Length: 436
Image 1 (cartoon, rainbow, N blue to C red):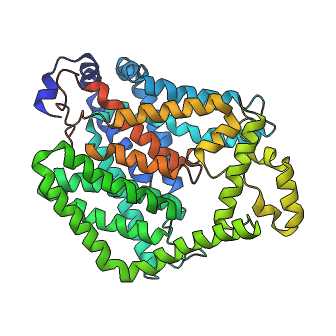
Image 2: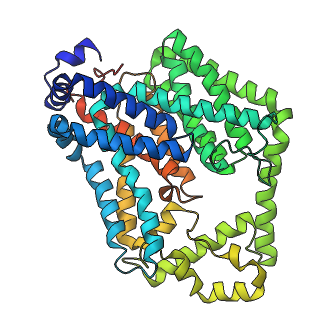
Image 3: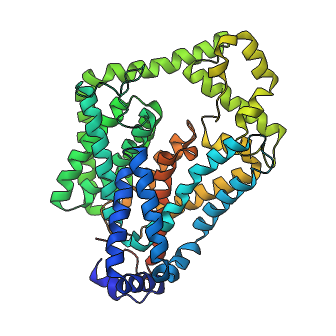
C-alpha cells in the first residue's frame, strides 16, 4: 500500500488497517487463501470449491478482528442489492414446482459471499487479479497441450479446446483477462508489462481456440473499450495506446490465415442455424435452441409477470407450453435436447423464474456495478479494465445463464469485490489508494 494511503485519515480504510495490524499472521494466511481461490476460479471446479470453503472458514475465524471493517462493506448499496438478489432467489422457492432444481440454482449464489470473504485483503487487489490471471494462463497452457495432442481429451464436436472447463467458460475468462492485460501493458512497470504481453498472447490463443462465439463477441467489445478508456483518461498514454491498438490489429490480420477458417466456420454456423430456424421452423439447432428458449422465457414471463414461475421451474413451465408440446410431437426423438433447465440467458431466465421483481433487482445490480467499476479511484495498473471486464460478463450473460454456474458467477463476484473497494478511497483525494 502506498505511504500516502497509510496515513490518510479515512475511517473505512483505517478500520481495515486496524484489523490487519491486530492480526498480522491471520491476515497473511487470509491473503494466501484469497489468492489461491482467485487462482483456482478459472482453472477447475474441485480446487475452486476447496479454496472457497477454506477461505470461508478463515474469514469466519478472523471475524472478531474484521467485523467493524466488514460493516463498511455491508453498507454499500451494490452489496445490499446483491444480498437482496440472493434473498429473492431463495424466496422464489416457495412457489416453485421444482424445488430440487431451484435449490441447485440457489447453490450458485454462494459465490456472492466471495466479496465478503475477500474484503479484509481487498486493498491488495493486484495480488488477487494477478492470481486470477495466472489461473487463466494455466488454463491456456492446458489448452495448448490439448492443441498439440499431448492431452488427448479436451476437444468437443466442434473442435473447441476447453482446457479443464467448458469451452464457453474458458472463453469467458480469457475475454476478461485480455482486458486486464491491456490495462497492465499500458500502465504497469516494464517487467509487469512484459509479463502482461505474454499473458495477453496466451489468453488470445485460449479465447480463439475455445471456439466460443459469445466470448469472441465480448472480447471484440471489451478489449477496444479498454484502449478507449486509457486513451481518454491519460493524455500521456494516447500515442502508446494508439500504437498498441494498431499492433493488435496488424497481429490479428497476420494470424488470420491460421485462425480465420475456424472463426469464419463458427459464424457461418450461426447463419445456417438461423436460416434453418427461419425457413423450416427447425429450432433444434444450436442457434435455434437459443431462439426457442428465449421465446419460451418471454412467453412464460407473460403468464407470470410479477413473481415468475419460481426458482428452478423454467423447464417445468416450458413443458406446459402448447408450442413446446407441439415441437415434441414433431420431433419425438429430440425431446431430451428440446427441453433445458435454463433459458441460455441470465436476463430472460431471471424474468421467467423471478418475475419483474427479480429482473428489477438484477438490473439494479448491473447499473450499480457499472457505476462502481467506472469510478476512477485506484492507481494500480489493472484498474482501468474493471468496467470492460465486467462488460464482457454482462454481454456473455445474454447468451448463457452465467448466474447459475460457480465459475461464471464467480468471475462476476470477483469484479464486484474489486469494485466495492472504492469506499476505502476518500472522495476528497481520489487515486491515492494503490494496493501493492
